[in-house]
Structures are given as structure tokens and as C-alpha cells.
Image (cartoon, rainbow, N blue to C red; front, side, top):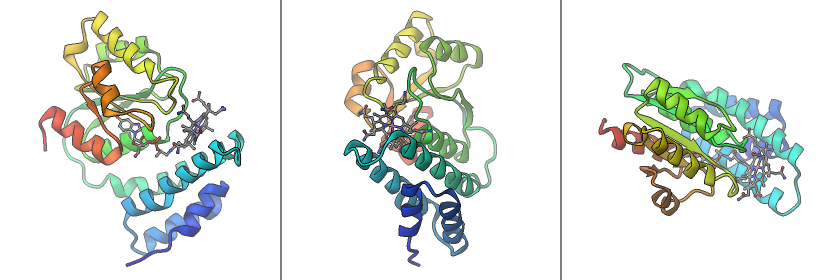
Length: 213
Ligand code: B1M
């Protein structure tokens, strides 16, 4: 079945929450695949928002409205990604690194991991290295997941890994990183265990790290 997701993308780009949530619901009610709605309706729209911002054709308040619109639509998709979870596959502490306020991607990764059976401790945005270390120390998660969307905040990932080493915790937790400017090469350079380019890969990577299915 083909569902036209262009009206949804347009509504996200314009930051029209009412139209976007209506279009999301319409797509779901019409039997649309939630993953396709997410990838081709919502994430594709945010890519266009980013391109327009970079070209000076959109500004921060408009980008923020688009982000809020996307989040409202993701909330409608959430139940579809979280059907039938049983016992926990492991605990993942998640956060966006110091000085970085982008949380849509991090929230999506958390949502998918939760849907796949992991327990999530979400620390939010602008998380200091020492706060990550404290939570790892207190909660003993199997995985620490860090997200960064700005090239200027990527170094906070290394700072966090270094802080884990200083606290004697580095070998007690697997570290997974992601976010638009992050690469597998960078993950290797800073001593992370895994890089994942998107939420689906993050689930596969988490399972591989813990050798669970
Ligand atoms: Co900002 N912003 N922003 N922004 N913003 C970008 C990132 C930018 C690329 C736009 C551009 O110039 N084209 C650019 C960064 C340039 C750079 O450093 N390379 C940028 C900038 C410059 C800024 C400000 C500095 C603008 C300013 O104030 N002048 C400012 C910084 C604020 C701060 O953080 N301190 C800023 C602010 C904002 C808003 C607040 C307005 C808003 C964020 C709202 C929010 O998140 N609640 C915003 C938005 C919306 C964007 C864009 C348009 C969209 C980001 C997004 O949500 N994408 C973005 C352009 C773009 O990326 N196309 C842009 C959709 C999301 C699903 O994708 O986050 O990549 P993403 O997540 C993916 C993967 O990366 C991966 O999986 C996710 C799902 O598939 N992933 C992981 C993410 N984390 C992972 C963790 C993992 C594994 C995978 O393991 C743990």
C-alpha cells in the first residue's frame, strides 16, 4: 500500500503541529508502516529543515517549531514501536552530551531500544561527563549511550570516556555513540565500543554488544 507522506513532511517543515499530527494519525489509520512514516515522513522532513537552516532560509525559532512538531508525531508512533516487551535485555544509560541540546535522535534511539526490550535511563540533554560517570557508578548499566549533533560537542564524548577511565569504570560498561556528525572512525579514535548511524542500527549494535538476540 502506498501512502502519500508529502503532506506530513510539509507540515513538519512548516512546524504545523495540528496538521502534522493529523497526517501521522491518518497514515497509521490507513495501515502505514510506522518505520516508513518515521523515515520518509518525519526524518526526511528534518533533513530538509537542516538544509534550509544551513542555507540561511530558516532560522532557529522555525527549526524549533519543526522539532516540536516532529516530537508530537513521534509520540503518536511510540506505541507501535513498543509492542510486547518482556524481561529486560539490559540497562542503557542515555544522554546528549555537554552543551548540546539536540534530543530528537537520542529520544528515538531510546524509544527503539526500549521497544526492543532494554531498560532505559534517560539523562536528557547537556549531560556533563561527571554526571554520566556518577550515573554509571550508581546504576551499573550494561551500556552507556551518548548522542552529539554538533561538531563542537563531539569532544565531550571523549571527555566522558576519559572520565570513566579515571573513575575505574571504563571496563564495566560498553560505550555506544551516535549523532549526525559522529562517525565510526571517530568512535575508534576516542575508544568507544560502537558507533551506530541510526536508531535501528543502535538496537542491533546494543544486542551485539551484549551478545543477546
Ligand atoms: Co540544530 N543544528 N542547532 N537545532 N539542528 C543541526 C544539528 C545542524 C546540522 C543544522 C545545520 O546547520 N544544517 C547544525 C550543526 C552543525 C554542526 O555542528 N555540524 C545545528 C546548529 C548549528 C544549531 C545551533 C548552534 C543553531 C544556533 O543557535 N545558531 C543550535 C545549538 C543548540 C545547542 O545544542 N547548544 C541549534 C539548535 C537547534 C534547535 C534547538 C532549534 C533544534 C533541536 C531541538 C531538539 O532536538 N529538541 C535543532 C534542530 C531540530 C536541528 C536539525 C534541523 C535536526 C536535528 C534532528 O532532530 N534530526 C539539525 C539538522 C540535521 O541534522 N539535519 C540541526 C532528526 C533526528 C532523528 O536525527 O538527531 O541525527 P539525528 O538522530 C539520528 C542519528 O544521528 C542517530 O539515530 C537518530 C535516529 O535515526 N543517533 C544515534 C543520534 N544519536 C544517537 C546515539 C546513538 C546511536 C545513534 O547511540 C547512543
